[in-house]
Image 1: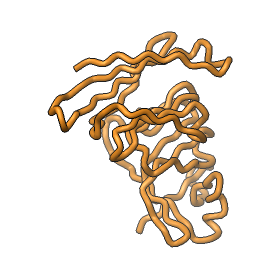
Image 2: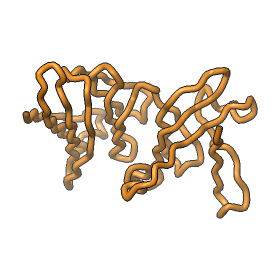
Image 3: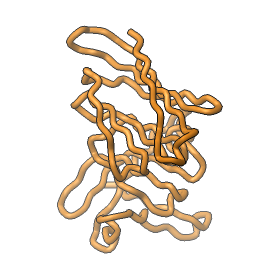
Amino acid sequence: MTRTYVSFDNGKNFKPPELEGKCSECPKNGCLVEMDFKCSTDLITNNFPEPWIVKFEGVYRGYGQSGRHIFVSYNGGQSLKILDSNIEKLVIANKGGLLFGSERMTGRIVESYDEGRYWNKKYEGTYKFLDIKPLEYPNNLVIAAFIYNEVKKRHSLILYKFSFHIYILGVVFKDMIFLT
């Protein structure tokens, strides 16, 4: 078992990551986080998608249970939020104003506009999301989802177009383009 520790003073002191929400008392109660550090050329891009935003996959162990999760920080790693364990291939955009990913084993797209507090779910008719990547443009964001429909034995590309001009009013306009 490997524990993850963080330092905010150039390595002079290390401590377990601080967890938000119901797990905030965990370090005192023996809970721990084991983060996956996958060395690759995309390490920085994948784990630090925007300034002050940190995203890692890993295992949370606490209260007699353990499970895989995505851990997200919106304050440079000072504290971590544990996301639903069913979410994978997560894209974070618009300073955390958009979280977009897929739900394991259901074939649903999941999206959140409030840093992961509430999730919208939409079924896309597939059980296999191969990859989800952001494609940024000056005034909007396009997210490409590469899927495989096992029933039809067909690969497809779905482009989700988001416009954030009106996000201040709480409205996000979204178009979907489906290519097969």
